[in-house]
Image 1 (cartoon, rainbow, N blue to C red):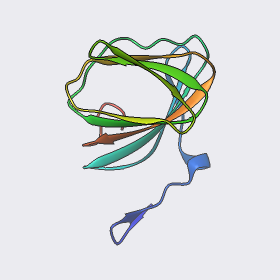
Image 2 (cartoon, rainbow, N blue to C red):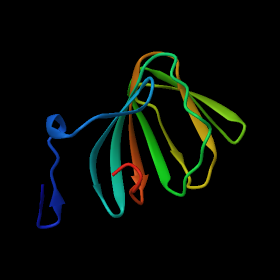
Image 3 (cartoon, rainbow, N blue to C red):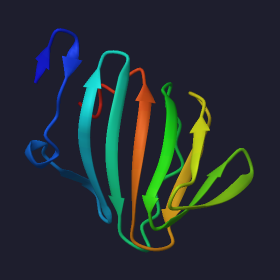
Amino acid sequence: MTSSGVTYTATDATPKSTPEPGMIRQVLAYNPQLMMVRHTFIKGWAGARHSHPHHQMVYVTHGHILFEAEGKQWNLRAGDCLVVDGGVEHHASALEDCEVLDVFTPYREDYA
């Protein structure tokens, strides 16, 4: 719901999707400049290597993921965060069941 420049999202009213096996996506909120997405990954999930023009902030709320970009690897656990500039090729895999909050700018039209 949007009012006076403020957007409120009730998480339980926000639909979830399964864009690929082992991943659940829930777009929590967005406007043209910013988007927050909750991703739940099942242990063993491995995303395809990809890039996009959006800047991305990754915050692990629980679990353990392996994130790879620019020939480097990061083991991310609950509380860890990283920022990926737009255009950087990257990919992640779930070493355990986990939940990640991703913030994108600008918002991703392909997710909305």
